[in-house]
Image: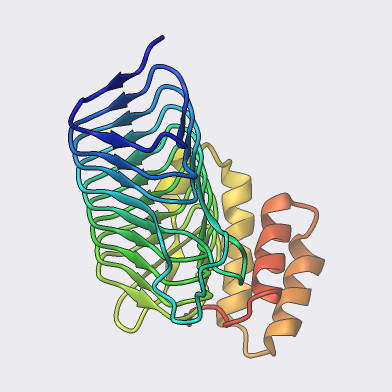
Length: 259
C-alpha cells in the first residue's frame, strides 16, 4: 500500500521508507535512515542519520530517534540506532545512536517506551519491556526481555537489569538488578520476587519456588558470592531459570544490588 506522507514533512531523498507508512506533518527524516513497513510517525517526529526501524512501530510527537551520542569521546563514527518491530514510542522519547564502543544502540520489539524516557548510546533494550515516564538509561546499559521500569528510574552506565524485573518508581541504581526480582527503596535494594509478574507470564509454582530458594541463598548467606552461586547451582541447577540467575550474577561487572 502507498505511504501517507504529509506535504509538511521532510523526507531526505536518500532515506528508505517501506510500504504503508504514515508520516505526519513537521516530521524530519534524515539521510541514511531505513524505515520498514506499517510504521506510523505522528507529527513532529525527528528520525536522524543512522536510524534503522523495523515494522509496525508507532512513534508519538516530539520523539527524537538516532541523535548523536551525548558522549564527549564520540568523533563522528558511522554508528546506528536500531529499533525492532511493534514498539510504542511515546512523546519526547530520545534514542541516541551508538559510539565506537559497540557501534549501535538497540531497542528490540514489542516494547512500550513512555513519555520523556531516554535511551543513551550503546544501550541494549530487549523485547517486551515497559519503561516508564522520564526514566533515563545511561550509556551501555543492558535491559533484558520483559523487564518493567517504573517512572523516573535512573540507571547508571554499564548496569544490567535482568528479565522479568520490576523496578519501583523514582529508584536509582548503580549496580545490576538480577532477574525475576523487585527492586525499590532508597538506596535501592532487593525487595523479593516479582511474583505478580511471574504468575502473569505463566511461570509455574515449582519454578517460582526454586527461584525463591535461589535468592534466599544469594541474599541470606554469609558466604562469599562465588560460594553462594556454587551452592545455588549444586542444589537447584538443571533449570534454565536457575542457570540464568547464576550466569547473570557471576558475570556481573558492577555487582548486584544489596538485599
